[in-house]
Length: 184
Image 1 (cartoon, rainbow, N blue to C red):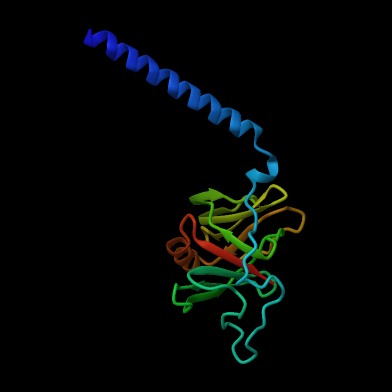
Image 2 (image 1 turned 180 degrees about the vertical axis):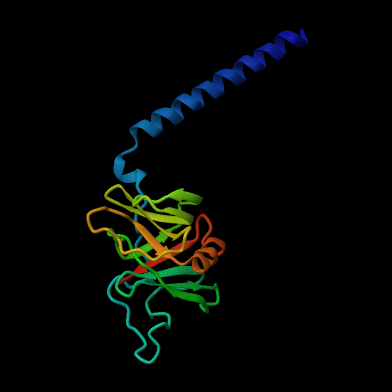
């Protein structure tokens, strides 16, 4: 009697797993394309327009760039700030953007890769992705050879390049789910 009830429970378990798997597959294949892409969220603490800058110290964290622990990226100034929960800047550095910029707003880190080849063919490390624009992934990365390159305007790239030292700091700071605030 025990073996037939075990078989019955096993059969129910297999059927349940098959049903859940099918429903998951069906949901995945029918999700609208817009929902599958990362998007900026509206945040009352983030100013999407050009954030005011400290004229005395251009590396100072711009006001209107959010609150709490976050990465702040200025597309106009090509600069990143790593900000602790206390709103204290732990590191700031210049970056070289790709040819595709993210829209100002608040994002979260959605994926990371230790080392890959960038869309421009450059081997990169410590890739921290947080957005996509028209199918182009946007994220921070460091060239393995640490050579500064001028982006090819004919190639659509979303890699925001940083030095290897800055890339190490970003990798440690911006884990999955970390907030990234993009400002002008």
